Amino acid sequence: MHDRRYDGLLLDHDGVLVTLCSRSTLRAAAREAFADVGVDRPPTADVDAITIRVSPTDLRSVAGRHALDPGRLWRAREDRIEAALRSAVETGEKVPYDDVACLESVSVPLGVVSNNQQRIVEHVLEAHGLDHLFETVHARPPTLASLEDKKPAPTYLEAAAGRLGCSNPLFVGDSDTDVVAGRRAGFGTALLRRPHNADRDLDVDPTVDASSLDAVVAEL
Ligand SMILES: [Mg+2]
Image 1: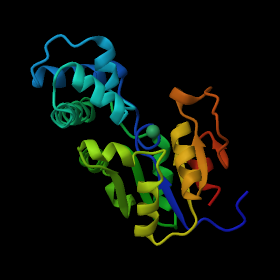
Image 2 (image 1 turned 135 degrees about the vertical axis):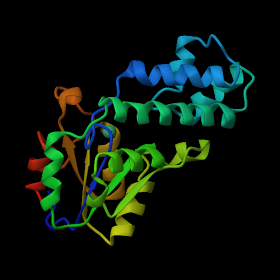
Image 3 (image 1 turned 180 degrees about the vertical axis):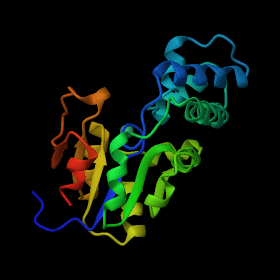
Image 4 (image 1 turned 180 degrees about the horizontal axis):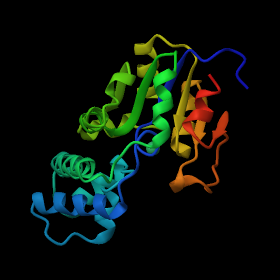
């Protein structure tokens, strides 16, 4: 339990503010990235390794197997994922959850903290007219080095709180990784249940287990 009032609200992007893309859309983008760097038939395991939740170690070993520069493979992946997510916004596959509207009435400052790319998050929020809600957005540049700063590292969370001038924000996420990152930063954590994680058991306990953003906002 937190005994102090929350002075900010930080939110994850994918699966919290906007719906997730299908795995097949993301996998197709990763496959195209291999083609971009001259690998026409990558093994499925290698495609999966650079699709989501990518570890720098895995990325380097995949690149090594195909005699590729890891930075070049990664940039191709980032560019293809960006194109795929932009088109998912256009086709209506990636849309805000209905309860995002409740954020309009929150009085503490709001920020977004994502493992996705900064340029993608900014585009999605702007395309859906949500960008005015957030005072700051902290996500990755499309570089290999940025993989070290992903949640569960608290790096982007701490930076966002610093930008908002908050010492006790509540962080809302949809995964174990989010809860761990929030705890490492010393913040309260809310696990938001959405259709994709409704029945998931977590290895870590969030401060709040919430079924909607309205329930999260009620904690403030
Ligand atoms: Mg998420």
